[in-house]
Image 1 (cartoon, helix red, strand yellow):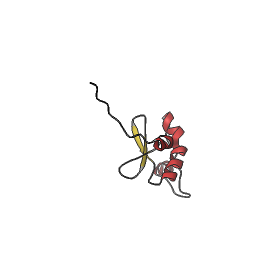
Image 2 (cartoon, rainbow, N blue to C red):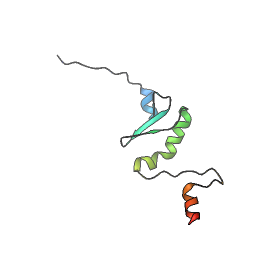
Image 3 (cartoon, helix red, strand yellow):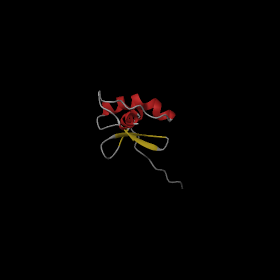
Image 4 (cartoon, rainbow, N blue to C red):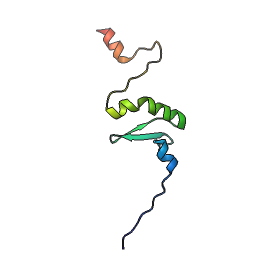
Length: 80
């Protein structure tokens, strides 16, 4: 006689596409690597939607600088 396992499937979770991790942050596994998007559900979804295309295609993410701050890469270029 076969043994059947029944899992609780939340249909609302399937529509949302991000999973709440046990650390309290929302995550999505893309190409075998987990990406975390924050603790607030709405902000995590917005952040995911902004980064989704580059994550799924494998391109590097564009980092948004905070105004007049200099990154290490820019400092190294200016140092030469």
